[in-house]
Image (cartoon, rainbow, N blue to C red; front, top):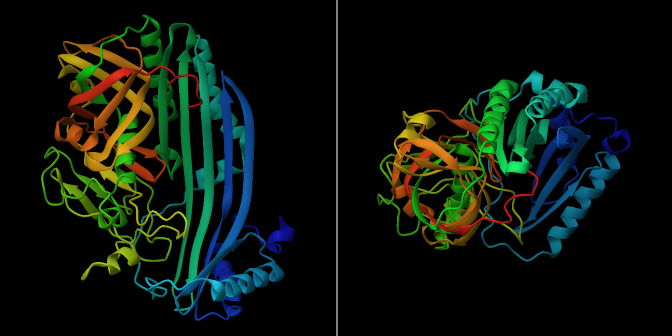
Length: 472
């Protein structure tokens, strides 16, 4: 590691040392404008299957990403060789690359410094300690495996921790720095003989956000209940459903992919098109992107160093606005970035995206939601969800790891996995109840805070064979 980093340890540099490193790179540039971004840290993972740990891995690394602009010709390069020679070589390459690239008519120049919001702390020493302590991670996992084994169940999943530093310096004087930790626990408890399984997941930046005992007990309790009777088949159709936050997560992220960012709206490929300002969902639905929520995964700035803003995306069932970066905001008079830029890639750029979504909680427990259903389904999570059309955010997928038939307000019996095909805007029009408790969950697009939901109707088109047998 020292050969590539010139003796620097990526996990304990701090803002002063990182700034010196970035200034050294900036001074080498011959471009009109230059931006240098540092990302470094340590990640550790303990993976287990069938009640036994089978993998303990850790990675320590640091990279510099350099953007250089000659007029409106913009090049970029990345290196994890942080020696003086390695940095000089990368800067020279990106400056030379910029000379040969086509002009970018939408290049706005680099952002000037702006005051950043007072973000909550995002670094937890307890999580940082776990990164370097595989035995401690193994003990936490072993308790889950032992409890599962004692109940004649099998537990499989992963426990990961990370600590990172991120910093940006550009030639206009902008400097932004953040240190963070993250922790994630995901596992499935199953009894294969009875096709019974349950899923558990929790995330955050603090170790205290992971309630190991509660997650373990709930997963085992649900899997045990399902193992006492074989699942039954039900006919395809539309049913009222109670969705745990795990199921809500994948549906919400399908809506992110189908257009909560301004680029998708501007290109008229978003479910928000033709719905802005219209109450197309239940008045119980409030969706906000809030990067400063201390119980989520707080961030003060985006990947360009632009301050994060709290953005109400859906208010009382009515979509109000997507999120913006500088490029998409410049396309609309009077707009400004909301601090949601994503790393730019000429070949695969999705525009701005929300990464810290919150669905405003209600006042119901999951038990009360189940009691409110005469005949319907309780769903723990969805799996293998894919978007079919952006209009009304249509998606298809299957249930997994816990689906029950509800009869007269009680969980009557497990149900075979089902495949759904549903327009999500239409489904959210029928929100009957919103859970009072929020779970913090890592998704593909960010870290979100979500409650359980009761929906009036959800469309199932067949069985979900093939949903089992994959890692959690």
